[in-house]
Length: 539
Image (tube, rainbow, N blue to C red; front, top):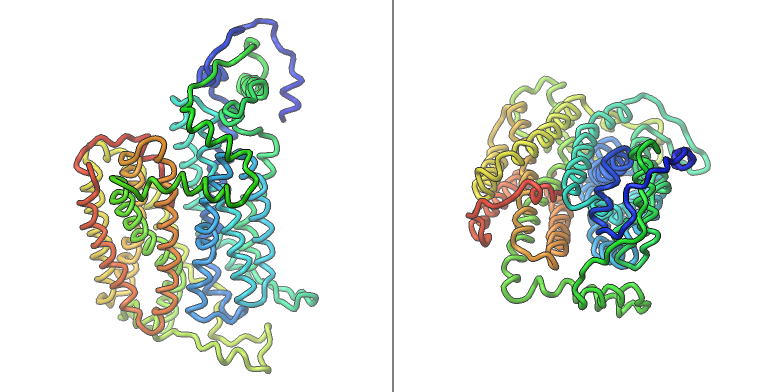
């Protein structure tokens, strides 16, 4: 596509031939197919992160017999991708700032896909845990960097619009997740791979399908250059001008007046920041890199910023503890409820259903049982209700984010946080007592919508920290959030079969506690948040 456009005849008209600011040059390129392609790729990368981390929740109920998974091991496996993200996101963010955005995004996408494919062929808990950890480790590289990469192809006046466009594509990916899972996992086929001694079933294919967006986006990015703003900040003026010319040709299909730039005006940058960036880019010592990473992070935990950072991190930890930790077992629990309903049970609590359908995997280790002679207790499909309610949940998320974005300026952040935390927390506690399965499931859905608060807390973070600390503050808070995912998933995995009620009490009480803590966010009473700031979101 690029070669075709490059060969188009260029008009002789010259529109610009003088030094301009890079932001002005990006505005001259118009807004067209080049920008739309980048937005689509960026949104798909964000969706790929969702598929890689949350897609495993649909695999656990149907893979437990093939991999001999206990409920505790399911908790570990559901959280291990987040552990990979936590362990690497700080590193990838630092490398993206010093080595380049595309330099980090491109290889990590391909490596994440390779790790995903390998995980689909694993035969036991430890192997799939290891491969899923590396999947999270690598996919973190693109998720931590794609916002900066996309925004730096646009002028400041257009960057928020581009990010919102990518967020829309991400929202579509959220809605498609249960549909993709249903179309793949509920198929009836299998075949044996003698060399690996495994029976290849639909859940293994689903894991590969979840990794395909990473591969597709990696291939697509081969046709796109490094961020022009990053190149320009590194002194590559001519390369930056060439990118601007290419964007213009794509957006005008070679039919517009010729855009010719001779040079770009240098951008002002604090000398200390510039020296630190150059030192980081040229640094070869591991200890020097670690020291520089610490210098960028330490101010968040000192002086007046310490309390702010602590509150934001605790809030994100509490939100992710439930929104992702409890979500990982959502399809599994719904499947258990449906199993009891098929047996004619119409009045039961969620926890009674969990206790009644507990799987004893010890029998599966008997030598007379082989891969093709699984007992009836093993599920090779998920009940359709699991997909239906997951689809409803993701649709609520997509619509809810839009509604909150419209009202946040008028209502303010504090009322939204208190309402969501309080309402979701109360619903989580009531699940323990409700013996009408359908009503309990809807309360479960409401409990999981506490994820709305992630974006609102991010908006608070943007308001609380200055420009030089803002990106790192969001990064650190989301790292604590993903740590909450790991802790939450393991708590559920550890307690679900023996202390099911306690898992919902922990989620409900922690959310109510977060609602109380929200009152202590500095400047929370001011209604000065902007829609652009609200767009800084991550689920």
